[in-house]
Amino acid sequence: MKRMKKYSYILLALPLLLGSCEAYLDVNPKSEVTDKELFSTAEGCEDAIYGIYTEMGTNKNLFAYALTFAYPELMTGNFTISQSDNLAYVVQRLWEHENAITVAENLWINGYKTIGYVNKALMHVLPKSDDEFRHIRLYKGELLALRAYLHFEMARIFAVPFASGDAAAKAKTIPYVTTYGIEVTPYSSLDKVFELIVADLTEAEKYLAADEELVTATRDNASDGFTSCRITHLNLYAVQALLARAYWTMGKLDLAEDYAEKVIDSGKFPLMTTAEAWNAVETGTLNMQETVFGLYSTQYTYNFYRNHIYQGGTLALSSQYSEIYSTDLAGTDKRYSTWFDTGNSWCIKHYNKMYAQGESNPTYSGKSIPGPSLIRIPEMYYIVAEANLTKDPDKATEYLDYVVKSRDLTPFAERETGKITENNIINERRKEFFADGEDFFNMKRLQLDIAIPGGNFAGTDDATYTMPIPQSVEDNYRQ
Image (cartoon, rainbow, N blue to C red; front, side, top):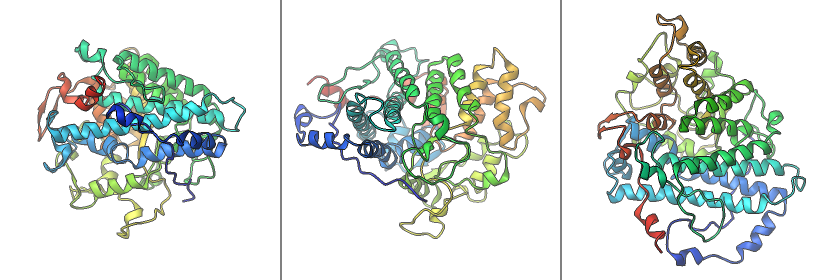
């Protein structure tokens, strides 16, 4: 594919919120000169933004592995892992074991390091006038959205759910860092963190109006500059989808519905309804119809293949996976027949063409974009359906049926009850986001119990879903 340059992020990020005071001061003063030169041109600004996306997509402790198909999928029992792996202790919720602590530290360090990159870029880009560079408003919007998105991910891991009854835990969740420097940002309450997430996303939305023209319903994998291939950027519709996801997480379903409908009504992300569309889908790549936002990352595609598809991969498919697709089954679920090789329970079926020849360092030659889909359009339909379960059951059924029909299932409106329940939405989400990393956070929001080979975990126990902040981070606040 004709693809954007692969950037290495050249800005210096401070070791935020972890490490000694001496480490904080170990900064190359020449970096400030480099910064001024970098952000003095449009190309330099774009290089910095691409560098952030690259870090997110290639870092194994972020979206190249941990935050997509590894940590959340193991926590729900979709996959199993060797006891020798650090993540095995996380799955068992042995939070005080050194292996689990290492996982938590890696997630925290790399999450806040990347937030540091974003804040450093914002420090230079946000003060610029809106006419300094042609696409300066896009730069501002994407960077604000990136800050919100990364904090949202940190909150989903380290903060208790809104439904938690633990007032003390909700009063102190994570820091929402908005500056770049050596100062340590205090912790914020859960409400405050999400207030700041919404504020950054709302501001980002104002800057991204150009995406109404730049994002088209028909896409290819060509990239001819910053304004092309917009689904690999936090575009306007991705920001609206994140606002829907944030309000949904908070339990503010009316506001979530409003933003979800904006994304649906744009018409930019049509659900798959044809055999050709389904046959074009490849594991480990963006869905060229349904992806609202994803990252370009051949590293993610390789990791997905080696861990899920390759026989003998480190993450083994649960033997119960097929039961998920038999729930409320009416018709043949396209997801089940397309995504899995039912004769070989160890693998997901449609492996990427990138590895068809068994090359050790292949070049992708398919028609999609390698990388993780972080937001897909079915999620917006599920949000609208849930928001209307009580106030407008017909609308709730209609919106869930849009996705159900596109998956070759009999619509709920045509079944005996003619209406949907909350469990119907939960089950559809479970099937839709298998191996995507999203279902775990729906289960966390609803505080559902989890029963997996590693044990039985109560949904109302904060330890089931919330990774404790490492003691090394806590110690840093006392220095």
